[in-house]
Amino acid sequence: MDKLFPSADLADPVFLGDLRAKMLAYAKLQLPDMDLAEDAVQEALAGALKNAGSFGRRSAYKTWVFSILKNKIADIHRNRMRTQAHESNITELSEEEDVINSLFDERGFWREDERPSGWSRQQEALQNEQFWKVFETCLDGLPGNQSHIFMMREFFEHESKEICTNMGITVNNLHIQLYRSRMRLRECLENRWFTEGDHR
Amino acid sequence: MMNCRQITRLLSDSLEHKLSLKEKIVTRMHIVFCAGCRNFGRQMLILREITRMYVKGKGVDAGKHQE
Image (cartoon, rainbow over all chains, first blue to last red; front, top):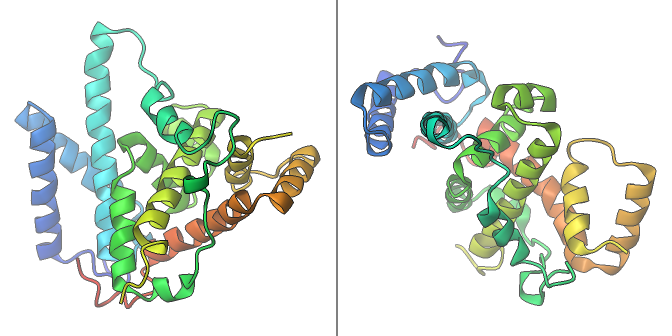
């Protein structure tokens, strides 16, 4: 077990027990069926073990496990919907398009108040505990599928092909999802940290 | 001429695969004149770096960061 959990001691039973309870509470809110919720949590925890060696930070591990759980819950809902409606495609998120459209004018150029600024004192931010909390909040703000895809790509540096097979999406779709995640995260960090002034 | 929306997509894609020569030239030409996209491009690299640090627990003392 030590090798599996190198630096953040993720094998701590108290930590794992607490994590499991939080996940179950969350899953029960999202799923009507208690057994289904238990299964989803179990699968998410088992799935996360594979990559546990990548983590040096407990909260990052937690973020990852929850993204798997959310993805599983979304899958369960999608499968149920499919029996009624035929198609369901994660690219059909017109709401997502609206979020990005609102950053640009009608010709596709940055709106003045949305134009990315130069991020100053960035190295300093990385030493600040508060910054990592903000980062976590921004990650949590990504929609379910999107956050899972983003994490597979950027947490573990998985290859495109692997992610596409895993999620059942095309490469183009993958790139769209990554683009959307990055747009959201960038904006979130800029608004909540880099243009917020002094944080100390 | 490509607009900022198209250029930001290319800048994100450039983290996934090599851009074609044409795409590279178009992007470079654009960011010479557009500070917003220039900043965006830098931020894409920073974002990747930050995300990897987050997972590995670098930056702050990971041992102290328990929850």
